[in-house]
Length: 358
Image (cartoon, rainbow, N blue to C red; front, top):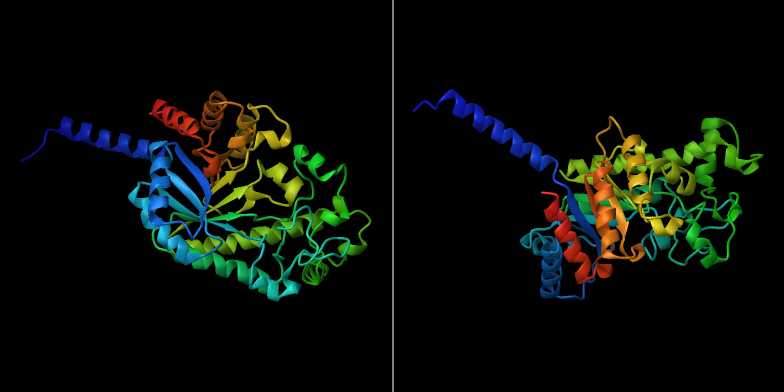
């Protein structure tokens, strides 16, 4: 039976419209940390709560345990949630393998190693992105997670250097003034980094007159992180999953604070942690930082999901405002830190805001 041409035209237009709608659906995620001691029933209940509250995806930190991740994926998917494998990448606190190799760790400008002298907090145990053995260890962990059936992406966190500058609201906590780059927070000056840099640029950063304005030395470290990301991208895609990452608010800021220039990376999506309260900013900064990141990625495949810090919000009204500002400024979704911080009221607000976007 031949269908009328008008009917076929309308059917085609309808299919195109539906496809475009699916491509542009604004998504909602949440970061959570898993505990192997919890039961499947507990997780089923938690995942249902998220789904009922408008959440579409969970980014799960299993401390790089593929077995635990594999256990949780079908539970989450049964409740209608997508799963991302969240990994602490260059910062590897209590990594039993890495701890057997003290030479894998980053070294500060004043000669102290993260192996036994950790900047800011005890869980800052940063591996060197330049040294062959340490970077291969991290990439091996990425591959272990990428092999888990049913995940959407491997989600890199701490894919950077230690903070050369802390967010301004955190400085009083550590009784610090950071008006300049301080040597105890400036990384990495290990033998692998110094020798490779010398080979490429014919100078030693340890004897630089002012490393803060030595652009080759800065770019060397930016590129060291980029190289790990780009290799991780190849690994993830080999296993038919995406590569995503939690990053600092926008590229220029990330560059300045933590040697991270994520607009240069080969990566599918980024989740900039636009935690306005960390920087003593008002709620409209969520929109500003989202817009800046989107602009820096113009013409590139990488998409942005705005990270929102739940404890930094004053009300559910601010939560709704933050979501809408992220969307209005070009993000394809939002993600909330973290699951434990989401109240029933927050979830109702998320669900209602999501419904209003349809």
